[in-house]
Image 1 (cartoon, rainbow over the protein chains, first blue to last red):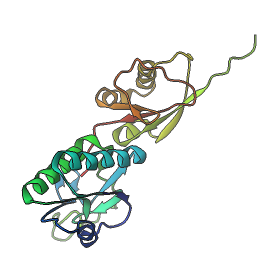
Image 2: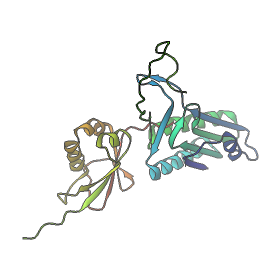
Image 3: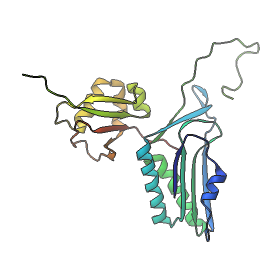
Image 4: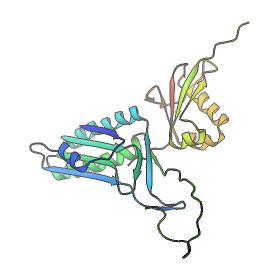
Length: 146
Length: 89
């Protein structure tokens, strides 16, 4: 089992390597990425993640153990980013390797849903710096975040 | 009569709780020495009215253990954490 709270980018290829092993016929990898949602404050450019780290790591480990017990997961990874995560980058990777696909899908679903409600990790839209207003010759419009 | 020695609890705030308080952690007087988690939460709400709505939906952690009840005693030197609803992923 691999659990991680990372300040840097999460690697999907590294996650897949963690899930390799003999007889592991079902591998499910879920990658959650930051969406450029439009909010009343404009288009989201990034999210900021924080955690109560000791408890978050303990919570991730407990989820991994539960996935083994309930679904027979033989490899589990639970990786989550901390700090600022720009749009389109992965904020979370959940991976499971089992003997067959049904358990792999079920375990991955279980892990990501439980992670969201039971592990002390929070996200927020970072505060934006006020920019001086500059008149545009064509008026307002365009993307609020690049 | 000499001044009484008041110990302190370290209180950790995360997410919306940190925003409401303006600090990630505070040293909070453990007074009276028989303080419970409920007393502590009430005193936090009184001192930080903006924190009160968050406290109503938060979980609390004492020395790394989630509290099932606020009746538990809090002692000087303890670490108490306020966990607003989680939102990872």
